[in-house]
Length: 326
Image (cartoon, rainbow, N blue to C red; front, side):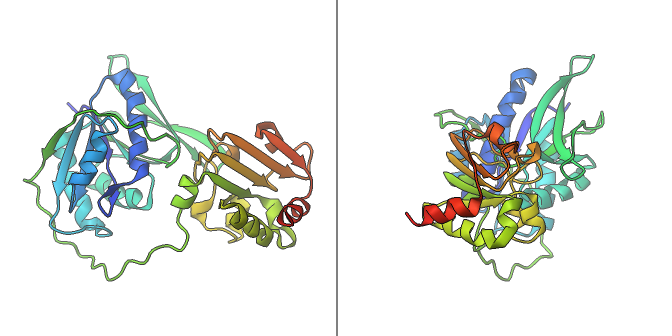
């Protein structure tokens, strides 16, 4: 019978991606009720460093597959390998980071395993059946950002697979825990029909928002009167990353992977400065554990002031122009 919580250890250049490390915290919350073992699945040309990182964040068992080449972007081959590994591991649930890689790979894996896949979860809870077994309540925003739904995997279909939005859970503290490492050398690396010609780095990566200690968030007010140019100058001056609300994305002012909220990223900066943001819950749910939250809005009744530590009722252009003179 399927048992265990398995985490997909997404990696790049021999390093574990932070979004995968966060999933250990999610798995621990599930484990508190189900008492299942937490394992990780690693597919990489060089596994050693990734395995050591996983040992240090509390994974109990590691299933590793050393590939004969880098499979980055060769999702046809990588997904087949992962599906073959999961058939042998037989976990009751698989947690995957909701990254472009996680989404692309595991949509294919789900098809190969004939099971479901819930995308972009923001909360995982455990429910109990009458027979004493458990299932995972996979909570996520839906229908744009207007509805919050709970999805349950159909009974009898395993594993329960779900991608989890980066930033929702925190990376666990480092430990000196030991983990059993199982190399699945009997699984073959399939030939890929994809040829990777060149990989170009992004000029501005999502990681800059997820890891930045200071984030400046622009709302609809930042779109008026060329205010966004001033917002960018302000962010550059204080060394902040720039995020925004959905109107900023819809107008093409910022890319989608810089949107903050239920349908975007969840961030945990030390300082968040909100400029021209009304403060709808769909947006503010994407800002967690901020030590200092400052909001600027012309509307004294704006909802953002209810969640901010400090509020300034003023035009953002006036505030920023005065600051830039300092």
